[in-house]
Length: 318
Image 1 (cartoon, rainbow, N blue to C red):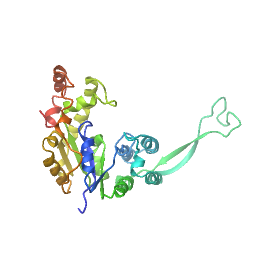
Image 2: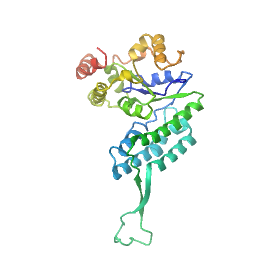
Image 3: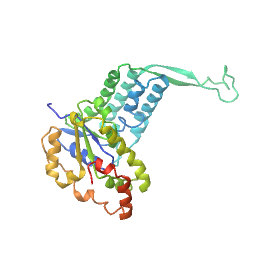
Image 4: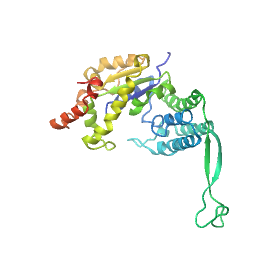
């Protein structure tokens, strides 16, 4: 390949996904999309739509999926800002984003029509409640894709237009996108971008849980964090055991290994991505991984280790 493949970064969250994405994006050939785009794998995103217009198709399911995607792409994604106050459309190019989204709908919709809405007040079914035109609502008839590949090609066009364009603006030939729960959606990501490399970064599950406790978006108690994280690990491990990841563009790294030998591990990472090694401003350091070691007292840590008893060794930790 003349240039490295696109990269998706995956992990549980609080495992080093942001830092590894920074490192990869600091390579002169790879542009990091600077925030989680969320519309590929989040609920209501491209992954849900791909099923709704193919294997799960019926008109109501398809219309609901299109409404959810519309809300995601036109309201939620543009309305969400990173810690620097930026939005995804601003980071990939606002005009590019708006144009790409507008081009998407005609490819996914068979037709539209207006459905009369129920009259309000004491109006009868055949006449309005007052002197104004009877209300109506816009309905959408989604396209059914008997060949899923046709739909995936349309969705790939959206991703290419946004991410390739952002990379080109940065003067780089390819891109890296990080969303932690890419971890549970690898099949779809490889279906969408078959040549992509997925970099999965892991961290000791007890440390991951301890770090979750300090996040405003995560459950604040140990029991809550276990309820949140344990199914994620079990889903990942169950899927992992059904596939041959050695046959995929898949790179798994441990945050602890990166910190223990950063230059050597960085060289190995870039080699597996098919690019030359470069020194990056971002690094992995041991003290950043152990800064929550004392957050759990001995009894709590023992309880967590017991609760994660099968997960810890399955993830390669002791």
